[in-house]
Amino acid sequence: MSKSITNKDQQVTYLKERLQIFMEVLDAIDPETTDLEDIDRLISMVDDIEVKMDHFQQRPTTED
Image (cartoon, rainbow, N blue to C red):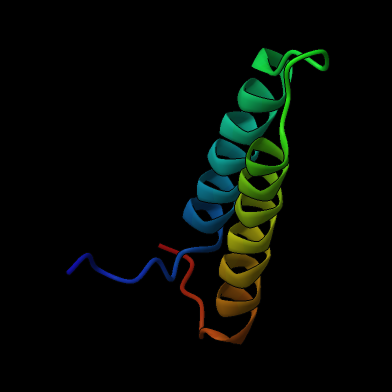
């Protein structure tokens, strides 16, 4: 199991990286061939990012 991220800068970096991955996936999708499963995966990615953001907000932070 990985160590919890409690440093605010690391939390922001993590969220930025996840959003970057989401944007890359979104850019790679061809609107002509996209199916419901692709859309569901995108929604799942956004949901995962939102859950992680909520966890970060509830976690005590450090300045390290």
